[in-house]
Amino acid sequence: MTQALPPAPSSPPPTPPAPSYFPSGPPQPARPRRAGFAALVLTGALLVGGGAGIGGAAFYDAVDGDTNGSGGSSSAPLQVADNGDKPAATGSVESVATKVLPSVVALDVSGGGASGSGSGVVLDADGTILTNDHVVTLGGQIDAKQAEVTASFSDGTRTRATVVGVDPLTDTALVKVEKTDNLTPVTIGKSDNLDVGEQVVAIGSPFGLDATVTSGIVSALNRPVEVARDQQGNVTAYPAIQTDAAINPGNSGGPLVNMDGQLVGINASIRSTGSGSGAGAESGSIGLGFAIPIDEVLPIIEQLRSGETPTHARLGIQVRDVTGTAGSSDTTLAGARIAELEKGSAAAGAGLESGDVITAIDDHRIDDTEALIATVRAYRPGETVKVTYLRGSKQDSTELKLGSD
Image (cartoon, rainbow, N blue to C red):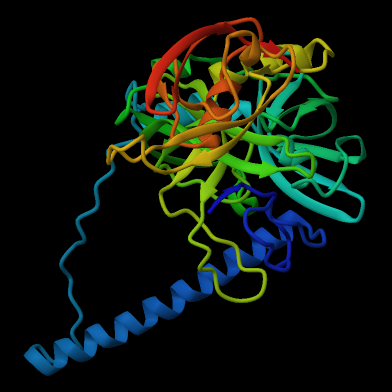
C-alpha cells in the first residue's frame, strides 16, 4: 500500500481505508508535547542507567569479590578526549544539513475543525514555500482556501503564511510567508542527474519533530506511484524517486537533496505494511519512501508562482490494466489497454484504437495503468513522444504530440 505522507496528527485518528491520506486529530501545542517527550526519554534513560549500574556491580562482586576492601572504588583516571568541533567535511551529510536546514520550514495547518502538520522548503527571497497539496488540504479534508498556515523556521522564527496555489494531480502546492526577512532559498538541482545508489538527504518534520535530518541512497528511479484517485477518476501519480532515507508522516513537502545540497525531490509518500496496531495507528518508515522529482513539477511550480492554472499532458484515452497471452504464444502481457478514445484526442489522431495495449512511452516501459499515468504526467503538453503498442499479437509504434487538459 502506497500512501501519501499525511500531516502528523496530534492525537490518534481512526485508521482510514487504503489507499488514503491519514486524517488529523485535534490540535495540541507543539512545544509542550516535545517537552513531555524529552522528559519521558530522560526518565527512561535514568531508569536504564541505574539498572545497568546495579547489575554491573553485582556481576563484578560475584566474579572477583572485594579485593581491596575499599568498596570497589578506583583512582584510575578516565580517558577523555576533546578533538574540538571540526568543520563539516565537504560532501558530508553534516555539510548538507548545515546548508539546507535554514531553507526548511515546518508547516502547521488547520481549518474546518481539522489540523495537521507537514514540511516545506523556501524557493525564493519573496517567501514562496514549496510543499505538498495534501499538506495544505489536510489530505483532502479541507479546501486549500480554508487553510490557516503557520511556518516555523529552524532558527525558531514563526510566521503566518497563505496558500498561493495547489495542483492536486501532481500533489504540489505553494504557500507564501508574511515575514520575508533573512530567508535562505534552496538551490534547485536536476533530478534527471540522479543515479541509483547515489546518496541523498531528507529533511523535514516527521511526527512534528522539526528540522529532522535523515540520509540514505536513491533506491530506484521512475518508480510509478499512485497515491490518490478522486470520484471523477482523476489520479495523483508520478514517476517517483525511491529512497531508503527515513521518511515518515510529517515529512511531506520537505526536500530531498543531493550531496551538493541541491533540491532534487519533494518527499511525498511511503510504502506502508498496513500492520500498525491499535486504533488509529500510523505506519512509519520501512525504508521505502518516495519523492516527486523536481524536474517533473518545476513547470507546475512556475505556473503556480505566476498565478496560472496548472496544465498537464494527456493522451485523451481511458485505459485499464491487462494481463493475458499474445495470440498463441506463452508471452504474458503487461501494459495499459485502451478502453475508449476521446474524439479529436492526441491518441486518436495518431491512429491508436480501442483494444490496443500500450507497452512503452519513449524508453519508459508501461506495465499497467499506474505506470502510464505517471509517465505521461512527467511530460508537458505539446511534447512529442513515441508510443509502442500491441494490436492483437503485432507490435507497432507511432509518434504523437501530447494534448493538454
